[in-house]
Length: 196
Image (cartoon, rainbow, N blue to C red; front, top):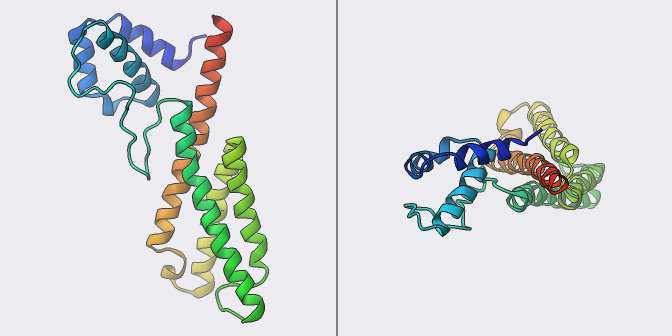
């Protein structure tokens, strides 16, 4: 059975140059496998002499940090790093506050927060080294649960949900997208190599 990207590749290969340029003009509205197949076809046709306005071969639009564009396994891995960096940041910050609370009691952190710090760091490590989808999803759930707990514990919504929380949540979600896309691209690469 063909992967979605292979199906799109066949579809675009059958198009005329004019039809392909029309699709390329609206490529932001396409799903990621379609965009990836379109880029390959555009690159091949550009090598054959077709002038594609605004197309930079080999340099797709990376998107934004909160919603990176993913077109292959490497871009998926880079997107997953968002989750890793955010998990390390939260783990480090939590660990510092937990260590400080050992010597000076804090109202927002306890020494037991060292466990949370280690958990965030561990999930970040698994996301980075293993491209673990489970770790990427777990870190989102852990982060949301901790933010909700902080809001309830402090009896203030702003205690758990602020601009930094939104930024970190976006990074975690972008990272989770990266891990799922990475495994899809790897699966497609494996099916292409075994078919060939």
